[in-house]
Image (cartoon, rainbow, N blue to C red):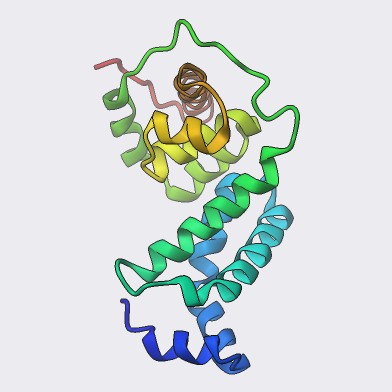
Length: 183
């Protein structure tokens, strides 16, 4: 999957065909990443566009260690975060106490829902919950990393994740009739 060395070299030299080829290889998958952070498809397209501009501008910095797709994904996530970081309402919710962490209770739900259904439900979350949920549950960042990325307290990250999970639990129960059991 990381056989992109020749395409990357051509892109660095400014070869437009190679740039188009690289874009076509990753656009669909990265659009899905952007969509998880955006309010709608148009916003996701803007993030995707901005992200690919950054990819092409920074290709020389890719050191060919690790996954190229992972490197592109990180740029897309960071581009999405930059877009929303300045919005004043993004982290208005600051419930540092009373969060619960019950990761395993959601595992069986995810297996019962179609990916598109789950993405739609995640997209309906408010921006502050959606960001933390995506970074923690989907991208795999720790709360410490999230608080550094978003300039929030670790307790805020945990409480936003907990609230996002509760909202998703309620939506799954309401729309799909799946009862969530606490394990």
